[in-house]
Image (cartoon, rainbow, N blue to C red; front, side, top):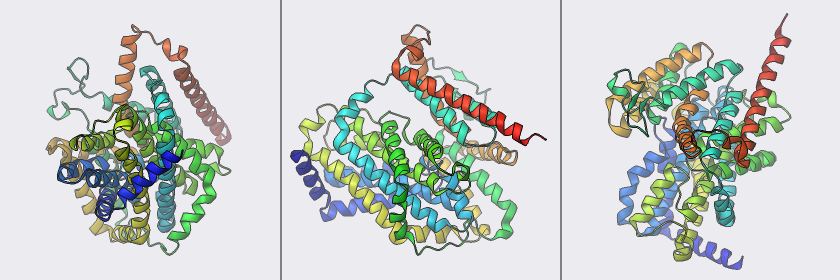
Length: 500
């Protein structure tokens, strides 16, 4: 244990060099900006700065990338709360309670709660990374294709339950999302599927254009109906931000539960911040004394989502540093940065490069602290002022930013049209009471479910029996069945109570 602490202190000393600390701060600010702007994300921020790290020192380059990673994941909470548009997929669950609080004139309080929760979740994720990496890495090796499939299915049922009042409408939107996920090129056989001869669909629906359309374009269209209201984000008191850092600790159970879920889901490649916040949200809601407040502006809902999505960062780094298996796309870019400087991430990384390993630990810890410092010192005030300008000015900017975000990934006008028509569809869904979250999560995780399920069926010669004979997958299948049953019973009881 003493050697671990000495390595950690050495890593912190290295990260606290003025030039490295400046790059960590710059990466964090850049990540927050990219995360806060709908259509941009941590991945894009890291891709843009990756070439710049080649000419830097290893600690400086990796510090810049780590700052952008943490800032990008956190930044999504700003637009999610102030205008109801998640800046990143990780902050979709934050909109459920964050934006209702903002509409009540409590955006300052909501942003303070979200920022503090992100910090505590990131801190617990760092503790898991620093002290539990070998054990959690071994657990990750027990997860195969059948287990992945069962976990994703369970995640789908949870999202259906927390996304709206009607289970049927949520399931319909989930099905639409799954259909969207299989449009384009078949990953195994290389044939086109469900494109109907439309050239723009040959590559399928990419995540950023879809998010831009569903959340940005539709939101802009929705707000044009009430231009007389003045601004999307009402004025709010911002003089108690620091107090939220301590008040959030009263929700310590929610922080711990959500962070543990984020860490455990984070170590599973590809799932991470897309589904983990919803699993945490569902568990915190079940344990809450006031579950009826969730979705109406419950602080616990914000705590669950934000503590969880920042904890996934530490979880995603566990298999990356121990096994060379990235937990999500930003970690792939981080590994690329390490390779640019001559490091080979994998089982021998700990033994051969302990100084860099513990520098990464220190960079994650400092990036979380800098994130909180930036948000509490000027970030929240700056963004709330920007979001409180007149709708007549803000809505065109939001619309253009969303469409530019769709174009900026592949520089393809087809993605702009996809974003536009996805926005029109989402606007129609909103007006008819259909929830968007099940569709977008299914569209994001659908390819991962298809890939793992097809691999599993290939290994089992087409048999689904291992889903119920393998212990881990059986647990999640049973949880899926129990959750669906509970939702159906709840809906039936609700209809009986509402019957004359």
